[in-house]
Image (cartoon, rainbow, N blue to C red):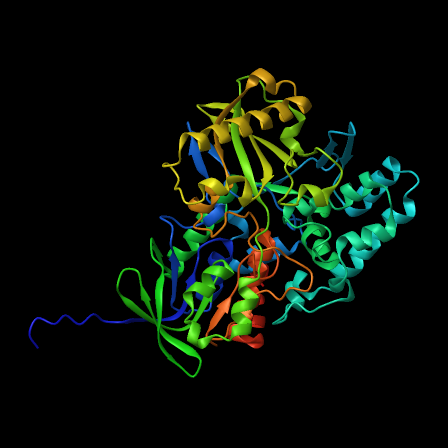
Amino acid sequence: MGNTLFLAVKKYDHIVVGSGVSGLSAALLLARLGREVLLLEKAPRVGGSLARFRRQGVAFDTGFHFTGAFSENGVLRDMLSVLGIEDLVEPYFLDADHAHRFVFESEGKVVNLPSGVARIAAKLRDCFPGEKQAIDGYFRKMTDVCGGTAALDLAQLSASPGMLDEDYVTLQEVLDGLTSDPLLQSVLCGFSMCYGVMPNEVSFADHCRMCVALYDSVARVKDGGDAFVEAFDRRFDELDVEVRCGTWVEECLDIGDDRVGRFRLNTGEEVEFDTCVLTIHPWLILDMLPKEHLSKAFVNRVSAFEASAGFFSIFGLMDEGIVDSDCASTIVSLFPVADVNRLLDPANEGDSALVVLSNLDEVGGQMRQVLTAFELSFPGRVERWKDTATGKRPDDYREYKAARAARIHDRIVSVYPECRDGLKILDSASILTFRDYLNSPDGSAYGIKQKMGQFNLLGKLPLRNLYAAGQSAMLPGVVGAMMSSFMAVRAIIGKDSFAELMKGRNGS
């Protein structure tokens, strides 16, 4: 035998690649069935954009800031219940009377919206008294779309999301058919910022699916995204889910009958598995799969996906004593112009949409107001530094960041004058920061664009025991990313086993 060393190949029922909320959900669902699960994460810690970071002792959210669908019958609460972590994630709802504020800077107009579809519609009828028919028509269409979408209800979940007539018409086309008022159009499509696609590119149906929960109610979470991560960690410990950080798939091995038998990891070891759920970006999936087992049509399809918008963000702390600003209970969106298509166009050279969030947190034994602002951004803004790495970028990049942060500060001050001298910016992040921190191909906030007529990667891939999930698979955000994993797991285990898993909700 000589000195030859034979390494045992460990076998798992399931491997999950990527530990954002989608990967965490898939791993926990499978583990709750008693399966042996391995979760792989390339970064040093799990959580992806859920995980918080700290500056000078202040906790800031990376990518998870707020969500809908947390109401009593909301699909997010339902999914957390199935996962067994509902009691470990504590939401707090924004002011129901002033949940959203849209500030149109060039027009000098402010529109404040409450929570609840009926209340929002009533408020808009007051703000735009000649547009009752358009407002009622918009919300009626939205209600019809969401009522016909099985993927928004766990009880109706199927292996594929299904298509409606509204999947074949753009949001902009619907708005143009309802009203010619540019401000009303902007308010109605303002939540496009929550998925980063122009109204003339996204289908009306997908817009409705992504926004209806934000109309219903908006919640933040105590301890932010860390609460999700810690809840999953606790259940993983109880169910013996194996989690490996700093680890990724280098090569697919033992391929036969369109199935992968083993992965070779970057550590050099090999692992066997029955099925694998890939929750990473579709471009990374394409890079990982052997090209000889993929059709040209599949490669072209994935290669053609476009990046959604990203953000330039600032993270700040208000001076002691300034803790009563109304932005602490309201999401404030600043629109320099009313044309949302222009704001979401990568070619836009001017100011872009800016979202301002604030919360109270204990800092140094005192309650302080923490502020985060994120402005739409695109890779073209940082093209000249794309080949540099975090911590090693040149002086002109730092000058770019400083100038952009200062401009954002000035725009915030125009709405909240107390921030002029009271806001201290502790850090800022460009789209490149997010790219490197999250191991993302482009730093986009929402994965690929959800464009009308596009076929995303969801469920079974050409190698038949590999499945795709994640925010690029179906819809972006926490709800869409989690739901894609529920759908992938249903496809893996079958509808009967999935139905049994669903019976565990709320202790039933």
